[in-house]
Image (cartoon, rainbow, N blue to C red; front, side, top):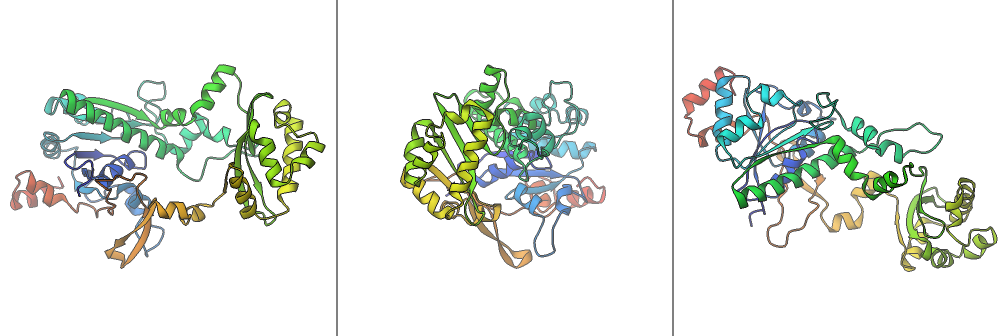
Length: 401
């Protein structure tokens, strides 16, 4: 069956990760997505392959399932083609620096004159209104400004941004949700609108209730290897420990579960003798917290993480192995839910593992495609707009496409 977004038409003048992933998700769900690229060069991430054995993993992950149309939007003829496409489009997206789209004739005010129902999605680094709105931005900048870098740091060690592009992906998912909300509103009211989101805005949302708690207390959270929250009366802990082979695992529990969990592990009597019969002790001071974690390190070093995770889960405590990225891609729950799948790459003569879909639709399942070659759909799209073969060839000779 067709995907749940079958019939939705999307145009995207977007590059990088946050600006392209929302539209790949739309394509997964059946939307007709056209990616507009610069003639001859296209999206720069096309030229980032790690090896000749497969395409650029960066470009492929972020642009799968979309169509590629080359179009020179600095030329009047190129903008006229864009305007024709806008006439029956549902969504237009761009992630240029604030002001650039307006300067080149495809800002929101320009396009809504052509199509008042259009949902216009703009992604920036800092947000459109702040003092740094015109600056370029990256995932690392947003992780740093939004608090991710600090809250996942370890005291005494240099801070670092995460290996995974947390800010880019968070922003992308929020942009995806925002455009769906805009689409629903446009379908119900006949009125489109501009939706702005940003890398920084996504990181602030990602901080969730912890940020709320920080603002209410006017005090930063405890950082380091364990997340210990609450008060001595109502404590909580989320921490990672290594087993006897140095392999990590994690568990998370509330203070009321402490005795049950530690008893199931066979640790409780020894912890009680050391003054840690109550988890609330760890909240009372940094010294007590460090001593308790050191004690648990020694206890967990006696056996394997498989046993510890099994025991904790058996006691109805949340626990799991701490996977590497490679291990995560091979996790049985990941595979069973098709969060990772594989697709054919005819040009490379092989099937490669890729992201699956984070959703499961009972009636309209997602379809996972591959990214287009540069300009692969240009002739098809222009023919659909009514241009003939001679006109298309003339556009090509004049470097309009």
